Image (cartoon, rainbow, N blue to C red; front, side, top):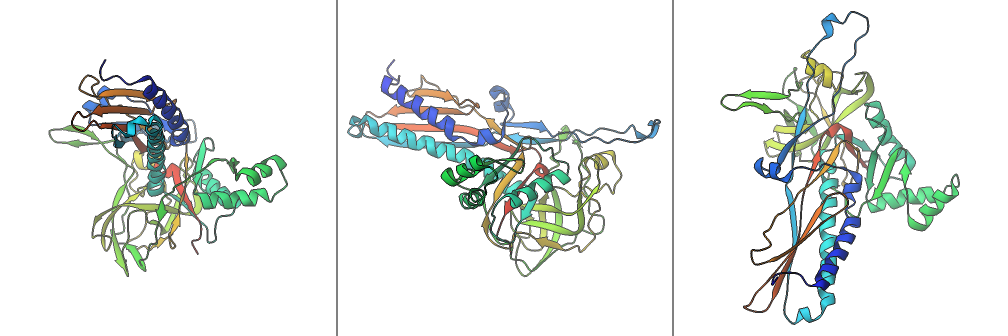
Length: 423
């Protein structure tokens, strides 16, 4: 067939795919959810994924008054990231077959990095559990504090993952290398700057992490009014369209800002709003942390912003509120929002394995349409597509490598960031 790849090109593609499989660390750090690609095309590449249930229990034998509704919440997951590495080789350049192979290796490296970054940026922006340290991160105590925050809020203690930026990772490895409690582990830290499992987290060294800049406003307050709480709902009924799913990860609130602006990514606590255990609803004694994920009105000044998670205090008394309650009490009107990111820093994302998903996508270029197409799939389902098309005009050949995927966070309260240097 005139458009078929040569044997050398097939060998090179196999080598690129093998390296791509090893380089896509994101699929080792998150769940991979496979979708039916025909269905995804028909639904605009969006599928609604269920959040984990949180159930209530009541004491006593007679449960007559306790049979309430069980609300199943869901979140939209999209396959919305397509990245390509295109390049052109001339007829002269193609005399050196190694050149084509080196470009393929570079394409593999860049696309794998794009996938990894999409995952870590997702947690860096939306992870609502915010742990700050005044000094630079040094080791076990920093990671153990993340463990404490997750545990006291009822996040399962299995399959916890943390990605660390290179400087923080190596600082922690240096701390571990100086210990003599476990010579083998300390030796690995000394020789390879290797951490492994720390305080219940499987750690990874990131070559890039989301950078959170300073929240510079002097005073930020909630101005919604005294009854600021959120009522979860599985769906809403719309005239002419029936029942539509509701995304309950976010809430829009009104704020007042003095002396600056707020921005997407900013982290806050709210005066008087303590986090509660998700299962027992007991007061943790610690302020709940929130993130700003969208500036709705006001361009970062006084106006409305979208935050995560929503403030679910149970004040409305509905079954859904009591089931998904995450704070002890709702904030009062004028409650002070205290910024947590007071110095620019690269964040270290952490999450529970059920909180973050990668959704592999599939591209379907027609192989009989004047171009050659070759595809391969990693062990975790991410597809890499290579296409080639030649031009009779100048004897050049165009190549491109493509990957299609989506990164999705099912629950922002099961993910967060660790940042140091916040003195």
